[in-house]
Length: 140
Image 1 (cartoon, rainbow, N blue to C red):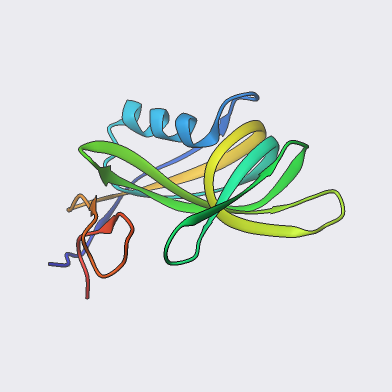
Image 2: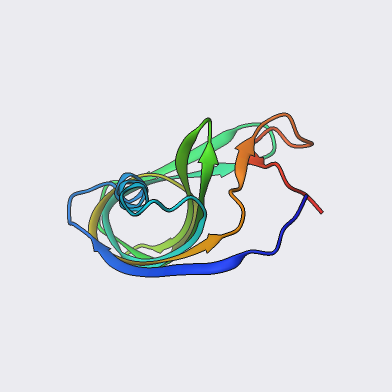
């Protein structure tokens, strides 16, 4: 079932240098009681680990040097009964080469973010759908 959502609160913030972006955003959302939201951001990492899913498994690319976060997009929902920040990023290295993928781990240099909360329904991630990933249960 799909439901119309209502816009809730809007937050803006910055992740402290040295922290992991996914953990920091998840903890922030927990602290504010957010259950479902859209996330966006920009900034830079000291190091980062990205993943690319090819339909069967994840492939990873790690950068152990400063890298620019040109764009971060994602959402917050519920997975296995816990709050889950699902974030994808586009990063650029010092030679302006761009890489994109699922954000697994990071060490933040500076990360500014927005969180747009939505109310009216909590989206829950589950496996066992037509693809081998944990995705929202609702479909159209």
